[in-house]
Length: 132
Image 1 (cartoon, helix red, strand yellow):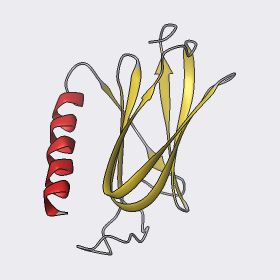
Image 2 (image 1 turned 120 degrees about the vertical axis):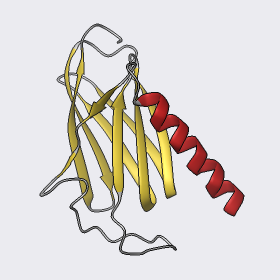
Image 3 (image 1 turned 180 degrees about the horizontal axis):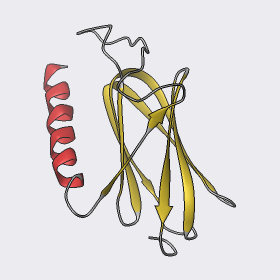
Image 4 (image 1 turned 45 degrees about the horizontal axis):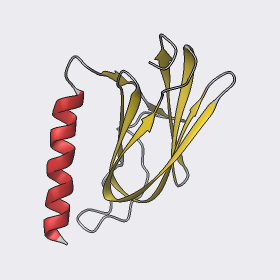
């Protein structure tokens, strides 16, 4: 179990370093009724049950990467546009990561909504060209 957690931790650190480069743009997420860091959502983490969930999203050229930390349970990711919707589920065990493919989506502004139990995080995603 500890080896698995360390592997996830190393993957998250490497992903964060990779996605924070020039190839990606961070999507500013806010929790409905607050911000992602100031929310008082209780989690079921073994280490510290009072830790807040940390939700991050990055816009890559043709995908969105989602990172969820300090949370246990299912996370629903929705990318909602004027005519299209993409959905993805992540099973999070203290830390989870997923990529949502954007290929085939039309250019325009999209709302990204990440639901963790009763907490909802939203942000705006802009797709400049078809499929990118």
